[in-house]
Image (cartoon, rainbow, N blue to C red; front, side, top):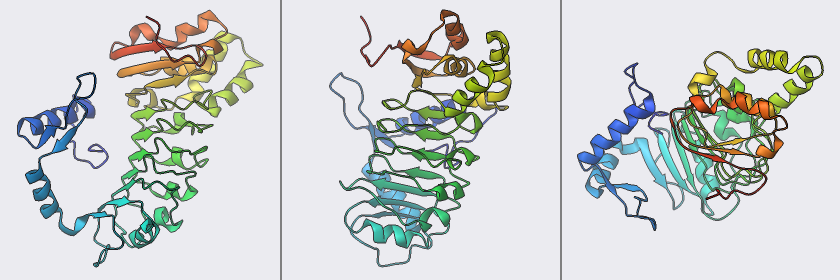
Length: 316
């Protein structure tokens, strides 16, 4: 989110993620943030802001930041830049009121237990929106007007029952850096991620209904597979699939769904960091295709998991 809000300044030498980590460690050292406790395995489960710093931040933010949880506020929302909404039975009226916040930059929806709905004009009037977090909100669909949010950099739809993303909308967001679809178990299709040239973080962990990384790759396979040798096919697909800068931008993708050799080619062009799980390897029909994944040169990976079928248990 810090990247999406433009809070991290690039020095041209380090990735923004590394600079952001340095920022966070400095704030921890100055006690702006504190450990929130340990998990069952002894790791730190999260962080929290010191209550004094929290009160100071709220005071400085003034009318630009608000938490809406008990109906509409008494004042106008036209000056609101950052809004968090508790989705209780009154949340729809709150979202309708937020349509007047023409310069809204951040919208975070906290689930209230019901299926979420939102006014169609919300995204049509949110052209300055940078962060949209609808995690676990019960969202079943996303309207095409999300494509009007041309400044959107962070989109979190994780743990929602959404089945499809609006065709031709999400991939047209020119500055989208983070797309979190973790736990979207009903999701059938991804957008054409090869067109999302600003995307740095893609999470499709737990998207059990996905069988391939993109229908765009399937179309290429059908077009080139009938008329080219496998070597020529590889070269043709590479030149057609990857736009300039795309392969260098994507930094993290914790899970890759393998529907065929094209998905391994997709993986081979990425310089990923952190964790990686390669799922549905039973779909690899030719052992030579595994070379396209280029795993030996992925020096920035911390862990690698290989999975066949629906068995997601890492062998000992």
